Length: 159
Image (tube, rainbow, N blue to C red; front, side, top):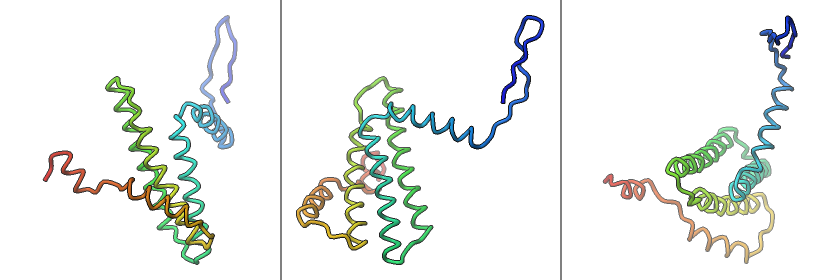
């Protein structure tokens, strides 16, 4: 706690700050909740669907007796890298003084990938998936193919 002592007409801030883990967690949670409403809708949806994909992936792995912390960590790292990429795009766009919302388009593209992954996880866990949903997701998957490293190199002029 930060103690304030009044003496000789001025405030004396004693350097006796002490923090407890629960208090720090409460402040961090408050910060996250406050900032959550400043995040654009597509990004909030992406975070929600990433969480759902992770949960359904772990559930499918448990059902199939294939649970692996290594696979789970790799999945979390990939998801973190996607969010970092979208954040960097947003920061670059802001630094350039643009408001094209490129990260929103990227978030929607990644959102499609997350929905497809959720359905795949459900199917792996033995949950029946309607054929019409599978057909629609297969079509979306064809439209939303990720660029390969070679394609990115071609765009940047590397051969």
